[in-house]
Length: 135
Image (cartoon, rainbow, N blue to C red; front, side, top):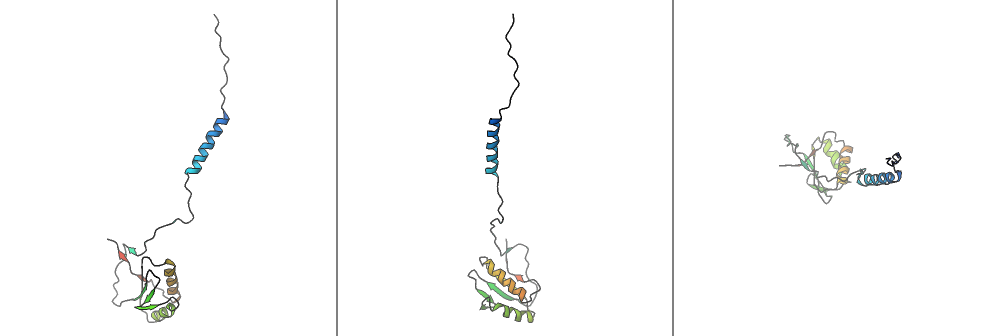
């Protein structure tokens, strides 16, 4: 008795369905990839410090304060950004130390302008800063 045998077919790969699968995978990878921003937004809390120490010099420094409303106070007298270079030059000439006391919510742009005024006045040594220590 002779059985009917089918001729062997060579297996084929169906390309159309593979293209669909690759397209779905490509869409999945594109959607789930995180894109980096050029400048990520960061929350900064400026006046806290864990390593700052107390000053050990006996002569008190001239305090330059900046509050949250952009008010400048130089040695207990209100001042403006335009008057600041003259006051700083006189302080540098008398060789007194300068300390910066800025509010946590003070505009950062104003702090940079004050630091620029300090550099222009010839403050070469580091400016002390008042900070609150963390518990």
